[in-house]
Length: 69
Image (cartoon, rainbow, N blue to C red):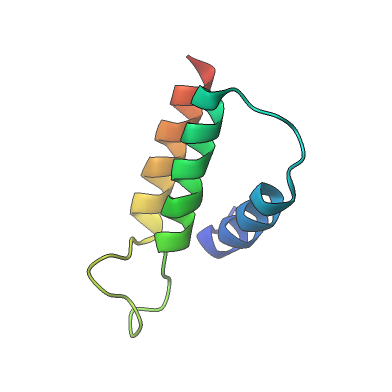
């Protein structure tokens, strides 16, 4: 899935989620939310606090590992 599509899907799903998560799960998902929010695909708009597609993928993989261990 392209990063832009992941960004839109994750933001929408996270904001509309009604399931209760454990504190640990919520913290992982919330951190990923902020990572997704920091993603910027437009190099002209990207600043030092933004992350690129490669970094977003790495952080999403880390979140998945944290959720499954």
